[in-house]
Amino acid sequence: MLFLAKIAIEKGIAGEESAVFVPSSEAYSPFGGFEGFYKFVTTSGLFIAHTHWSKVVLAAAVLLMVLATKSTFCGWICPFGALQEWTGAAGRALGLKRWVPPMWADKAARYFKYVVLVWATVEAGVAGTMVFRDVDPFHALAEPLTPGFAGSTVVLIITLLASTVVERPWCKYACPLGALIGLMGRFSLVKIERDAASCTSCGLCDRKCPMQVAVSKSYRIATTECNNCLICTEACPNGSLEPRLVGMRRQPELKMVGIGGKTHAA
Image 1 (cartoon, rainbow, N blue to C red):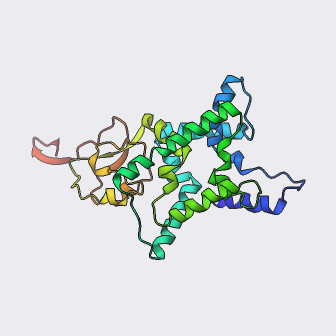
Image 2 (cartoon, rainbow, N blue to C red):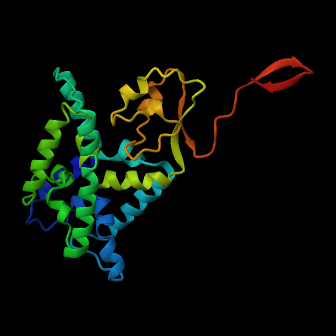
C-alpha cells in the first residue's frame, strides 16, 4: 500500500505534461502479464497495449509463488486485499454489523470472478487491448489523479463501501487475478492441513476465516477460495492447522516409556 501511495503521489506531482518519466501503476500489475499472454504467444513476442516486460516478469513471479505456496500473494502481498481488510476494520470500529449473504447467493456470486477472468483474457486476445483496465480498481487506487479511470474509480468506491460490511467482497466475487491464482493453487506444493486427531471441531477456524472457508470440515484446505492468510492457523487453540508440504503428514510425538530403554511413539 505504501508503494502504491508513492506512485500516486509521484504521478500527481509530475502531472500528465511533465517531462519527468514516472512509471504507470500498470507496470506493477501482474494480471496484465496473464491478460496479454495469448497475444504474446501467438505473435511471437508482441505485447498488447499497456503491457510490457515488467508485467510478464511479475506474472511469472506470481506463478512461481502460487506453485510453491498456493495463494500467498492474495493473503500477504496484494495491496487491494489489505485495503479491504482495513476498511472492514473501520466498519467494525464504526459499529457496522457484518453481513454474510445467504449461502446459495454467496456460492453463486463467487463464480462471477471466473466470468470476469474469461472475459478479460479472451477480449484482450481478440481486441488486442486490456479491456479490464477500464474497470480495474487497482489503477484507480494507484493513480487517483489520472484522468481516464472513471469506470475503475466507480468500482473502487463501490468495493470500499461494500467492504465495510462484507469481508473482502472484491476478492470473493470479482477479482480475476484471484480467480486465476485460486485455480493454479490446486497444484501448489504447500497447503494448510488439519490434524483430525487433535482437532476438537470447535469451529473457531471457520468463524475467523475471512473467506468463509469451511476449514474444520476438511483434512487438506485445497479449495480455490483459500488465500493462505493463515488466520485459521493462528485462531486454532490446539495447533491442529499447519501449512505443510503435500504428502508430508505430521509425525507422532515421541515419549520415553520404560520398555527396554527404547523410545516408542505415543
